[in-house]
Length: 347
Ligand code: NAD
Ligand code: WQD
Image (cartoon, rainbow, N blue to C red; front, side, top):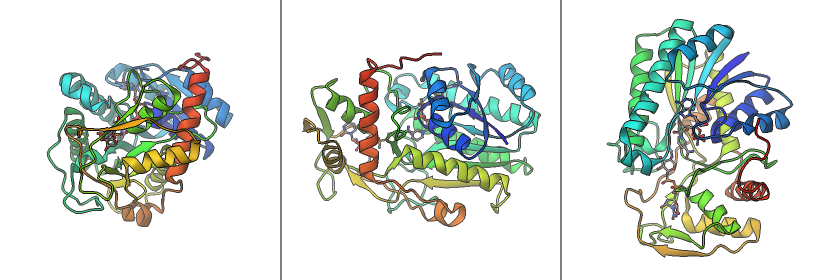
């Protein structure tokens, strides 16, 4: 069966392409390479021994989508990763985010509808919960006003999908709310490729350990948590990728009660910033220079997922530990440094 992956050369998309190909799906990727490298395609093929169809196109371009759907009339589903994701940049350039993330989804849904593609999985985010009053966050926890245009695009996208599927009952969709995806494929061939200085914790840790930054700044140790640093639910990107295959099969097998569902994807365990650093030092044997500084504006104190729904309805559960995540992230960083911080096998 053939699946279209938007954003398939990106961090989570590339791992999902691997999982899909390993499960026997054929994959068509559309990605404009605005935040990824075409060399990823060779890397995926090295891992799975299978080629993907690739289109370097912007998903806001409806003609391009039309052509892809007409060339691949056997596509059974779309997994939609393509979006901009830098929270800080979205505050500086809101229209860039509203244009890409909102127009992208609308254009995709319009073309899916005319090509009669019945299934879509959308990349949402735990950011929609803000700071939940009660933990763990369940899918019914209130969606709080977004604190960034990026976060707002995820809320609006979920609403667009819900509204669209309400009046198109023959189509089906799932929003997957990712918690904090980190780590890399264990073989070290694919991983996260942050452009510029990373804002996220894990790539900043690995880049500091490899010598690209003098130290990691730990944002705040005066939170109401056991060690005072903020808590998140980190999830291995390979677990996340596999969850997409499981969700896809649930759509294809018609096993969900409603034609629109929402699932959290996390491990259910919260770890503090200091615990992530400790895991990194333990698994890699590398001492990480760090310093406690002020809290980062906009950060929530703690959040972790209820995984009950994904577990009971989809039968999915994360397998990898925090140590697996920090070690695989480090192996990936070392691979990148051997290649002078970029891919060396562009296609
Ligand atoms: P990424 O930037 O690595 O991948 C996104 C891919 O989409 C990139 O390859 C980029 O080139 C492509 N893209 C962007 N706009 C496009 C467009 N208009 N047309 C075609 N291609 C386009 O990001 P990621 O970390 O893999 O995230 C994937 C999805 O998951 C995004 O929607 C993101 O918002 C969401 N998400 C990510 C995280 C996270 O922490 N990484 C957390 C929650 C949700
Ligand atoms: C994790 C923890 C920081 C960097 C963001 C987005 C969210 C989602 C995932 C897409 C926090 C601390 C970080 C550093 C630090 N993305 N930290 N020093 O903020 O939970 O979520 O990425 O949807 O929308 O907001 O992830 O990795 O930035 O931070 O101390 O240099 O690490 O304060 O407690 P966050 P993160």
